[in-house]
Image 1 (cartoon, rainbow, N blue to C red):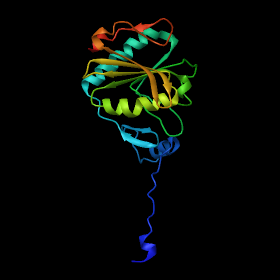
Image 2 (cartoon, rainbow, N blue to C red; image 1 turned 180 degrees about the vertical axis):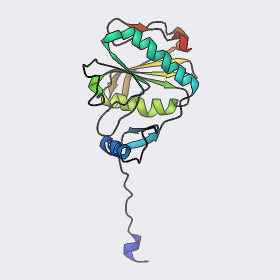
Image 3 (cartoon, helix red, strand yellow; image 1 turned 90 degrees about the vertical axis):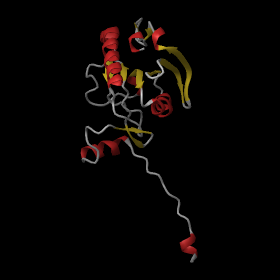
Length: 192
């Protein structure tokens, strides 16, 4: 064997940018209806939405919209640009109101008041990958609703290594969970 054949070449990982991701969609590499999201430069196929997840998301969409009225924009499964390498699609998000309704660009971390992830099959992915990404981006509050465990986790005080404060409660006790908009709250007990 020659010396050239024995020289190891390090393998490089390619990290995709949000712009790369959008170009892949524009050119048909990724279909518009494919359930793919970009986190920290990596593409992840999202788990299929089951009926329990869909029902919980529908309930939350209606409850949040009623609770906040015009004080916030409620978004459902729409992208949030966290930086150059991440554009997740939280199940729900409360955004600062804007006259253009974010028509010209997806919201950025400074626009986000709250993200909510509903988890049945996706608990590890949501907790271990998405919530840390939200914290690194400075999203002030994130909720994880663990349907199979009947539990709500409220994550606050974001830091580069995750949220500093986590409050857990059974969903059947989540009667008046405060929202980060005015003096509003939402009753999550129907999700138990």
